[in-house]
Length: 293
Image (cartoon, rainbow, N blue to C red; front, top):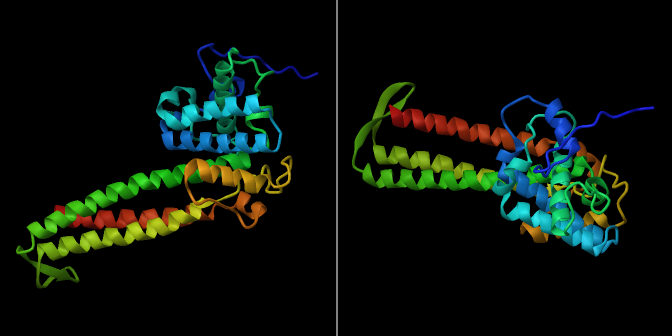
């Protein structure tokens, strides 16, 4: 006979026992999921699309679906308000199971309160049986991570554009300032400081275009793949419908992966994106070092 050790969850908390146990097991860094608002919003968007699709296939009741969607909207509209409900370390074992369960528990408890029940009354709305219906960590987490990364790149591109605009101001300011151009670490021929700053701006414009192209690859998702890509425990047609729902929620041109089994195990887009961001970092380092000199 197996006896699971019990834990007491504070009544003020919106997470549940799985999150509490994960807090005990994974104390690796000082970075908490709750600090990453784009990720919280993306997780809620995935769960909302799933709740809508499960209702369409009569996998959950209309009351349960609408309550879950209400909870998702809370996180989507004000993720910073719910930071405290996501206390887990960003580093943990597994494929993100604890974060997925943390999300399921928070959404279930918000939905329960919306319906007039107390937190933890999971016989009405259950984190697994209702919020996580037709899903797995292995399709929820990668899809949310892709969305969150896409949103984060929006922030990055905005800041790069601001830097480019500032550089162009300097181009005009320095258009008549002469200096020596250098090759092979030696003085070569004259140029203006404005020309040099224009070159810095062009460097960054090239990277904006590259990042914009690369980030489109993030929009190919495996939602509906469930555990290993076969779509086990989902009704026929679920994957296509849930991605259509997510498209309407996010406004992004999401598409389902060509091969869900392949997509569930592949992280290639993040390798490409990492290389692209390293390229940007090298360019920024070069520009900042030259400007400082």
